[in-house]
Image (cartoon, rainbow, N blue to C red; front, side, top):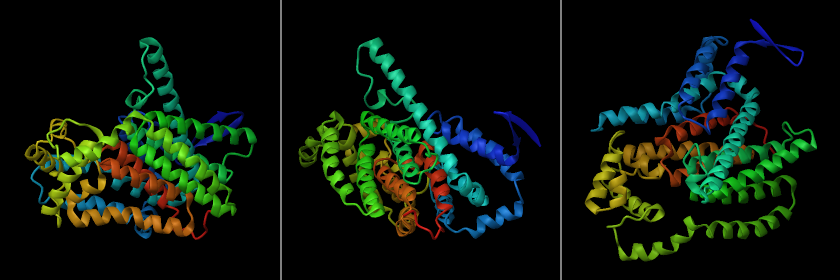
Length: 414
């Protein structure tokens, strides 16, 4: 065993510290490049194998049932390979979704470890989002001054991730900080609490300028949830009054955003039935949903197969002459539809259970963070095929497993 010196204290370098440090690095870099995450996962897995008793870890994995749905969901994708036509795409999809299998094993193999260091891991994730947001703001400021143009909206501000994922990460970090404030975690001093509050305001401003519609809806729902939670916890109706005042203001700010204002034209376009269109955004998504439902109607029992979702969608775009979706080979932009198309009723029901089983227990125990996470995830599933990307899979599988470790707690947060 080795040691190192920090502020005149000898800190032992143990497997415990190595694993924790690597996990903290992994969650810190989540908002940044996706390339660094897989090597860090491997680096975590190696010392994990030698930490403690391997048979005890295997027993832990089988004793804790909350993670079974994640593993079941992954194995349904494996079954989907049996009847898929595009086998190469199917294997690639399994590779992307490997986190659904890895993180439950890593986390539920060492439940006590992750319960102990859960808040430390959350703080590292929040720190990563603070740094990535600050870097994005600084770079956008530089480009705005250099080119005398607006670089503070939508993709121009989001330097590292697509705006939907960046908004999701930042909003969950916001909810973590609120959770820390409510439970006085790492906030014994007033100046630390003030930093938390300042960071929450900063994150809300970032979400506004990222201009992600999923981010807007998630933030709106989160504001309502936080107000209701505070009212229950502190038995004061003042929080409901605050929401009544704040929500119209938030809605006005969001509706005034150019990416939202153009939606007023959607009813006229839909009524005209103009499928031969190059419209982007919500308008083309309406047509994508329509074509997705047609595929589901034809393959509702078992779906098209793990690797055939995009092929079937592209064929529907070609038949209906939806130009923008065809040229860009767009996916369903909705995780529920994406799963239903590929895996049919079994896959869709498993995905719904993945969300509503823990939500039931979280509401029952008034688990603030789990409810927050599931609300954010559900909204983003409605706007994006999140589980088709590493940014979505890593975030969902890791934090879902981390939060599920405490699902069997009998004590509520209130």
